[in-house]
Length: 282
Image 1: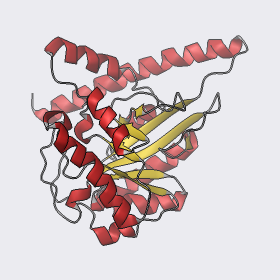
Image 2 (image 1 turned 180 degrees about the vertical axis):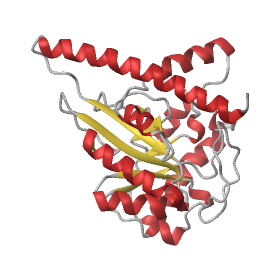
Image 3 (image 1 turned 45 degrees about the vertical axis):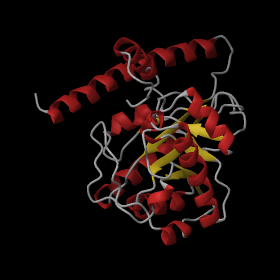
Image 4 (image 1 turned 120 degrees about the horizontal axis):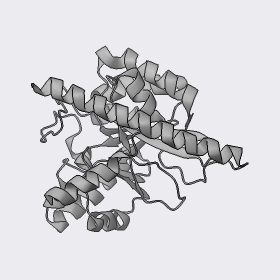
């Protein structure tokens, strides 16, 4: 079985389990309504990497579906969600030029807020880091500083994604401190904006790294565990659902509906079974 066929079957299996999970949770919500109770609010944070020119139209269709199914809000939200509503926040990791050129105009056109997590020490250069899980960096480039300055401030927030995109749990603590603090300072000085949010490269983190993020001044940090978000106004570590413009239409719909939130339990089980370092790469 080649890798492409295996990946296809894995995606299909995740989709099937997610549909079953969604039907089960929907039945529970229906019982709540029959009992006169309002279903709790839900929020999913989606995270993308690149949006290439050939996939821009597919991404635009995803945004149109998003508007129909959920209420967009910013990733720095700290307000209580209204019961019975479905919300979504959009984030983009790495700071690729393709995201700025293809995703940002579609977001601004629809007035959808989003956050770009930028690898601050590599502006204008080709990404050189190791990839996992089939991510492709071919032809990608980090947005140059001058173009990053032109990203509209009204709907598009900027967050940090470290200086050099390391696997943070494996670097010395002093190096991690530099990656966290200097990336924030560099973006603040360049853009004259407050940099409040941070996402972990590869989704790899530890409890100590979360503490260092607090010390560096970040108000919220993001992993890639597909959990519901903003369940508590004081929430500091927020999970996200990995998304791509090439997602099948049904696959994207159920990600948006929060149906993939069963995955963290499986990821945690696998980590314990194989005793791997803590990471939430799915």
